[in-house]
Image (cartoon, rainbow over all chains, first blue to last red; front, side):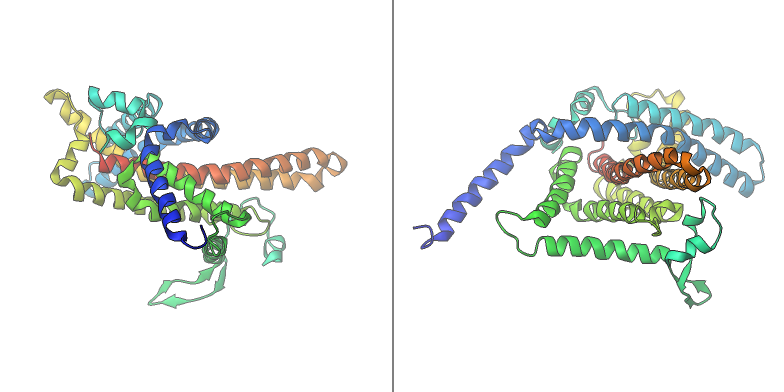
Length: 128
Length: 248
């Protein structure tokens, strides 16, 4: 029976697979490999990110300040200004990463904040 | 190739030296085929062979290689679905290539006497800059001038805007730097540390067992880091993409 008409059978399977895939984003976070991978990979990865984040913004700030100083001949004032702006940006980056804003530029509104907190399960459907 | 590193200095940094294999110049610009380029070619070939031969059968019940290839696919697909959503599907090829290229490069670097191209800042910065420019263009294409709303968060009083906007712009500009610096620093530091420990093995004689144990442990750690850094790079690309696609 199956070898005579393989296509309807496969089509049925296809349709069922598609239905399953459509349902999946809602329960995607609950599959058994998700939390496990998340806790080890994301935790260690997160720890490795934070330090660099602080330094990178500072370096960008100082580089921009230095470049503007060279260009405008205002050494060393713009570099000083951008040093502080850069360190503020670095702290902002770290604060955002730690407090769960992700790396989004700008703050989220209150309505978005809930979404960000439970980003993993709700982002695929609520972001549309 | 193998004796090139041994013949020269024993500096732990000698492993990062670029060596020309086929010297070549176009219009005064040095475009030689170097050991870095060789490692990149090897990575691309290895990934292509892995995926093409892994999926050659396309069996319903996968074999070992097919299973690995499908795991890689699933891993990146899940990452994009969790972090970007359904709209991110269009960017799957790019993020998958990025992940595989970095991962393969890190793993190839783990082979003794080979070269780790991800330990060069210009390589990682090139990748990060591609991501940064691409994401910015996507943001502009999708939101137009509204994209500048990125730099002025909601609810900021007008008298603070002059301070917040430069900070936000700097924070945005620091993305490619931190993205590239992270991968570069991790790979360079890890490989240097391994070389330093390995350098103690013969010097210490019988007590060299201790650094030998350490090097074995570090090799395992480095393989974890090789995966983790590729994962972090890919996931941050997803996060940036999500920002550009769904601005708040």
